[in-house]
Image 1 (cartoon, rainbow, N blue to C red):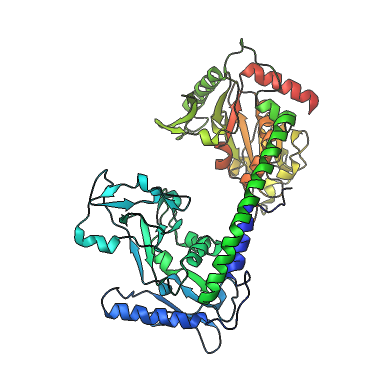
Image 2: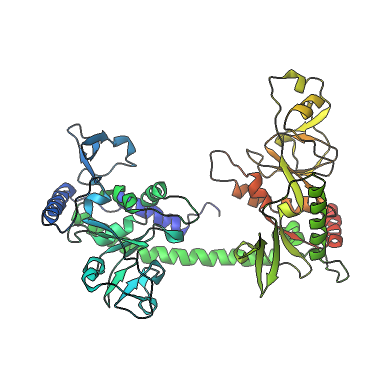
Length: 519
């Protein structure tokens, strides 16, 4: 069931076929793309000559050489880009940069949004589900002689250049009132008689588009990219007649993809209902507060966490641990969850995985224990290993249970001279990367670990065995967090930022006692 293609994957696959020339058949009678591109080039040169558009000093020109390889020319510099092209295209298609096929790539007008003004100004927030919500579009003040430069026209393509929507595109159609476009948008102007507007829009939904956009996006708190990112982007251009056929086929398939998406959602909902009825596991029951009954006489988790904070402060005062610069407190208000960090409150409703009893609290893992990774003493120094008596755990020794045997050992000298740390009995361990990622264990004696293992010594009076079972219940989530790289990897930072549902201390003990009987 997990291998089933999702609706989005199906759409992505169809779009990929479209831009590779595999969705509709080629027609030898079609005018080759090279001919229409020569017309576009000539029209651009004419517009530059007339002073209607400016010539770009950095515009890319892509062409096939006499050796049938692809080259890119920027100014006087020419280089072969054959190895950079992502896939092969039909012979009557051409690779071009976005800057080559467009007449102008233009930033929007910067002005404050007003309730009244000279003309309406479309912002990215006014575009939802590929439609402009004209009732919400504000006005702006702009000089009359500047309006023509920013006036929107049918078949313009708008592109979000900053924020969470960076890269999202919109094909302007059916304009029902004059409007300019805002500064956080970029407009691309082209000859829509030579390039099918909807072909360009479909291209802007492909993985090729998004991968190029990602490379050109500056990753900051507010992601952004510029017109150069769009201008340098390469795209495959089919003959115009084939563009029309591709668009027609994609429009024909869209309702079928939508039906598939709806069926997928219905299946997901059905599976969720089954899971709700059966419950995935006893562990899940336990961490949701459904395994043992709550006792109103129990000291609530909020008091427990306050005692833990006092314990932390004492350890900091004694110099045993460092002060946490991002100490957080999670609380509930107005039926929402908030996290307070350095005096600033953040709503974290989207992070909360499930509801918990009123006597429980949410916290981050770094708030209930001191976490640290291990180390590997230099293998070239035999004095660190020969006749060692201190257990040194590798992640392969983790067994999702109590650790009663560790075959490898290091010496007192290794403990003294390297960054390896001795973890006390009762420490909870988790593997951070490799084939054992997410594997767990509880030490039954003091031991060190290698750097692939993260250890937690809980702050008193938190119950370490409850932490172990909570991590065990979330093992799949840790594995998922580590996906995406050549080697699965969850950092200490990812671990300590994970949420934990904290029961009252007495309920932690009741949960662990019952789990100990059945697991």
